[in-house]
Image (cartoon, rainbow, N blue to C red):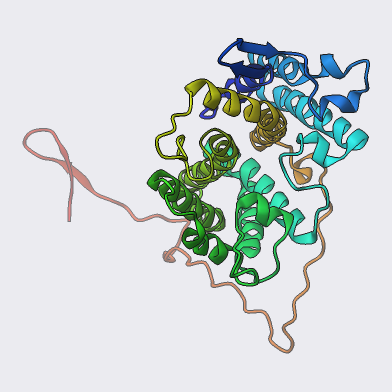
Length: 371
């Protein structure tokens, strides 16, 4: 029996909910207006005839994922999740490129070698750590988690120029462009504009600490005992989820409150809450559906690896009896020692004539031997 610590319904429900966000608008004179069929950049990849319908494809994928999570066992459910998430994203990437697939929210149109190292490391760490957190302490999963953590750690500490992945993670600095990437992130605290909210500083530094912590936790998973690996993997997976949530929610918060996290940038000027809702919803409409599709594919791959880790494959040595090879001895000149002699019973005088034993009766009728 196995337990499901990470619910398969969470990502599917979020995809169903956030995949149907309309394009909002609000004015003081006309009030609210919503356009559910306004095409996004990823929807235009399906052509003019399907662009308005393709807006709802992520929501449809979320509904199908909910059905798969409810009706299928873990291995088949994982294959379905991978087919839905990776299939839909792969089709858009093949037709219009990676930038259009993610609605222009991520600078991944041209990937460098270090960008692929980071994305591959995050994917490996997510899949392996999530599987091991559900009590799947396979050494192969531990090795994959360690490799993913090593890739992310190398990306963070090797000095180099700014790449697209650095822009995505926010590891950019105006005055320290050629230093260690993670150091650029901490040095960015001094480059925030005056009047930035303390919440912005706290959130940014917690994000950086989690970004540094989860690769080390992934590297620690293979060194732990089998019983302790799920706990370490759970902590590594939690830190990685916090990093990914921060990366997803930060653009929405900046779109609503600005880079300073201050809804009233000008003194004495009040911004209507309707404007904040419109900005946040329109940013989430472009940002969350492709991210959730990628997450759905990774969750499916993790569930499939969980199912494989519980399979008992027959050993080949038991199915096919191999002939035994002759044994050779490398000792020369040393004669084999004879086994020790088996002790013999003591010899008697004449086995054909046993000795006579004289017996008598005592006063109570019990036999006794005469000396």
